[in-house]
Image (cartoon, rainbow, N blue to C red; front, side, top):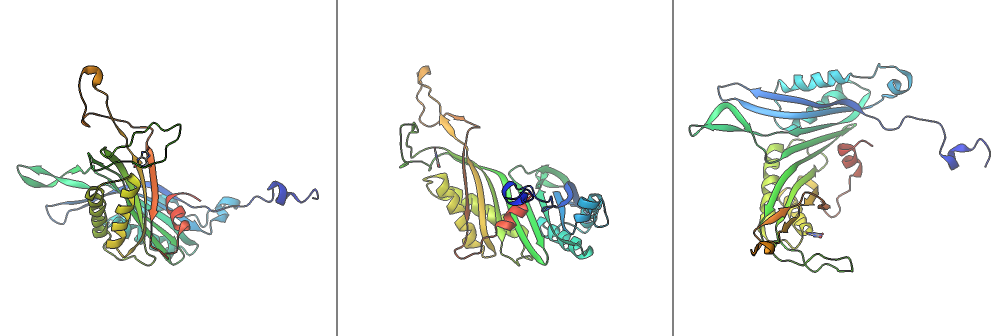
Length: 310
Ligand SMILES: O=c1[nH]c(=O)c2[nH]c(=O)[nH]c2[nH]1
């Protein structure tokens, strides 16, 4: 090695700009549709981040290509004036706008969480303009644009489900550190976080209808049969989604196994036939898997790009 050959062995070559993106995170936008006395509400948390020829700003203090994050935020509010429709459609509109309006913006990612509200009941009637937050889950959406390509991911998180029987865990390997007792009657509880990827080119389905149906399927499959492990139930849930929805390529899950331990009541002279539990918050099992279609091209760059900075 010569004294100038520093790149290969020490990794200290020229310093260059790597992948980058920028934008406004967590733009909270609430749209009320008030065409009649019966108002509708849409409530989103939107993140917009642009990618493209942005080297000038990073390397030379030249902001000629930097569409301000403030403008990105304003665009979210301006677009909401026409209604949101579905989070996925709203993000696709933003992606098409920024990549179409500014020639050096070649892609980006747009994320949304959406929060559901339901009408308050007053004297047996749904109220026209008073709402209460629906607490079951948070809906998520992501759009990744790369040139003309559009990738749509949809999902949900914090969907807490529990079955009080019809779950067990048996037949696992035991070693000197194993203390867990086998059981065929336990509580199975989790908080479902999932994201599904629509097949490339799927940009005009009824995303709201698919969302409602996927949620229905997830809940039904969680309930349907005996669970030999959370892993089995996870796969059943994903398989049912893919069987019902050909427009979805694959679905990923991250599900904690929220352990419920039977409390020993014998010191108090009481039995406990699986009725009183200690709900532990940590540690928890963490079960994660992708359910996909044989032959489907994996899209690691889409997933990485949608959920994390790379
Ligand atoms: O459904 C389960 N899956 C596991 O992998 C596991 N491991 C464990 O200790 N309990 C459970 N339960």
